[in-house]
Image (cartoon, rainbow, N blue to C red; front, side, top):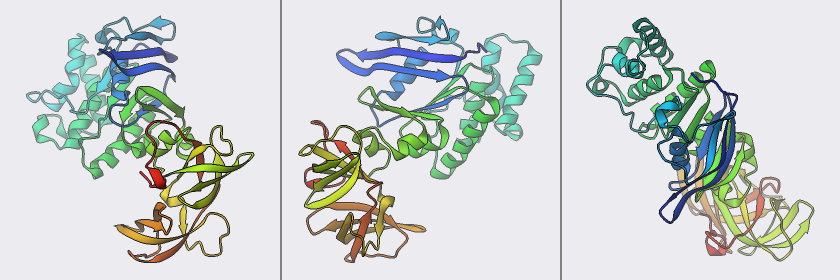
Length: 366
């Protein structure tokens, strides 16, 4: 393993013909960090990973391990491990042989190969399956083999490209825990691509949110969950209520805005002025049912749709002025119920509006 203190991406860009897939990505990754590249399909996250791996040449920019430039090196000389979405196991080789394959290609001594393979098997808890073929394993077990194969040669960096997307919901949860456990026990530096914000929040030390090839925000899970930098990030991070509105008053960080005939108070994120168009964002869980007696951000609405989700219900309700709200509640409600709702002004974020990709007119949620 070629150890490093930090990995630096300077202005990394990639174009396909006239189309920019990744534009000026600047990112410094400290040794031992778990970084998640997060965003919707087509945002550039897999392009960034493939550029880092050496599978795609850069159109512009550079990649450095400490003071050593590596974007000019072929993939095999970078010494990175990679875990693919499709597992990419050799179907005719046993679990043991799949894991040992890379070590044999590097011509390690037989005893060293056996030692490292046994240790990798122990780490991913597959000792009882060493002589099975991939076709005899479950999806989760196959992904464990792929992870063991990636870490067995002690790489300086592990790259994971949506490794859990082919698994069912239960296995995804189990493998999330396993990946985090492995990262912590081995001190691996990991770059992980996903479109699942819950997965990214649970695994990563820092998240990099991309949109249309450009970085929107870099921060800790808490920072992105509680304070998205713009409404595009808020949209992706679970703020299902996105309402277009107009600012009617600005008092330091407290903003008053109107949306679909409703007057609402929230916290300003960005430069907002009276009269400016804005986007109001709030999470479903931050809309409280039984808001009777509230004087701030009180809304009367009619429940339209209810989904059972175990301890909670997910619901849609609409005010008589047409504002559509997504909410979550433990209270038993049903379609047609009249409800009093309230939104804590500290939980309602108000962003400057932009000309492109706006939420629908009249304040409907996305």
